[in-house]
Length: 111
Image 1: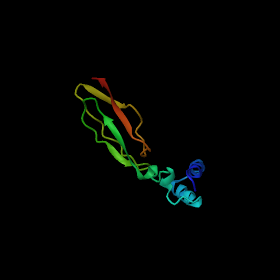
Image 2: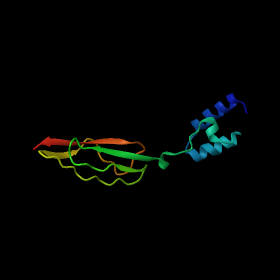
Image 3: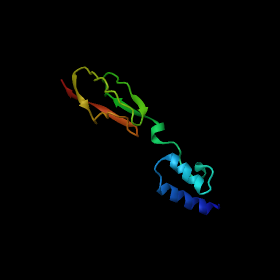
């Protein structure tokens, strides 16, 4: 299979991707032994670790959460900041780890 045919096969496979496992099987079915040879990433989002970062703007530290997509996310402790009342987080805390990193800020009002 020449390079042009490999590119066409890669485009066809990418258009039909459902999972990386099916992509590798599809690549083999068109004569490409290694899916990476035509640019198919075989790592799925479920295999990656993502982080939720908490910024407290001078309040007590809140531990970042690390997990894989779909893992349960524990609700973080509320931070404390002298002279302020914590009113919540800038974004909703997901119940499951999303397939991307997140940055969430503490929201304060003056006491």
